[in-house]
Length: 290
Ligand SMILES: [Zn+2]
Image 1 (cartoon, rainbow, N blue to C red):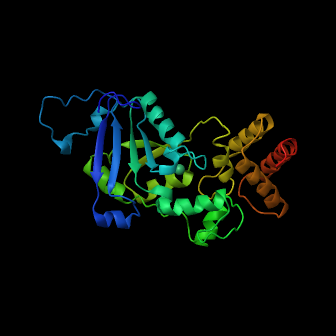
Image 2 (cartoon, rainbow, N blue to C red):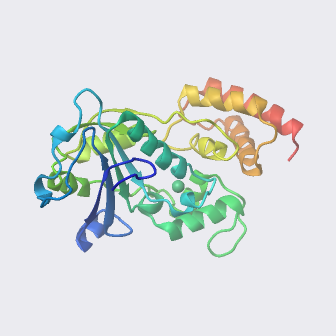
Image 3 (cartoon, rainbow, N blue to C red):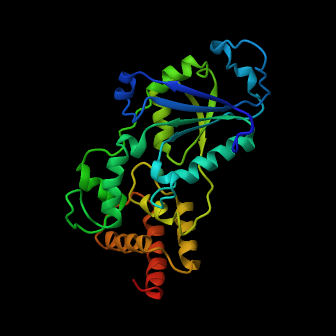
């Protein structure tokens, strides 16, 4: 691919998985899209291609890390939904890879953590309007409370990464060491543990907080996979102190945080900082009555 908007010149590979692989890995389609930006120039014009040996590690520069992003499909994020930051993460990952000069982006059809877009719609309905799939009003819920409502104690995330073994082996990418782009330590560990992909480190997104993505940050207070670290909570406090007026959903979540703290709920993040966040939130909510 030449002059790709995000990666410039890169190799685009589409892997078509078998029906069984699709079922075994909770994939919503059989096609996995892979973009590879090599550190060195790849000349394949005007000659026969041996696909088996097309990807050679010598095309990567040894002096720089090889970044790897394993990104999941998110149809609603692509259309600008503010309930997640998938779209931001997709574009940011591609620009990290481009700026670094080399890396791989894998786009996996695992909408809504493997549960599909229909599940996502039900979850969003509970978050936005507080209605369950039968149309009953049960009150607006946070992302994690909505998931609990729909699934009980079943784990939301049913993504599997085993199929990556075959892809990395087939494409001769399994002897390379990668730095994974992810906010989730759990994801980095999972990829390391259950695949033959060699992950030697990971780094988190350095994103600016905005009115459009603050709800995605607040959701992470309740998440088990994408834990907010102290830096994120400080960022939230600073943002809430200066922002003009927060979106209604973010306000609602801050009210719930306050209730959770009062009820002694353990959020598994720095409680001292959460209390400071709650103080900043109260000040904001008083100034902008909901
Ligand atoms: Zn998303």
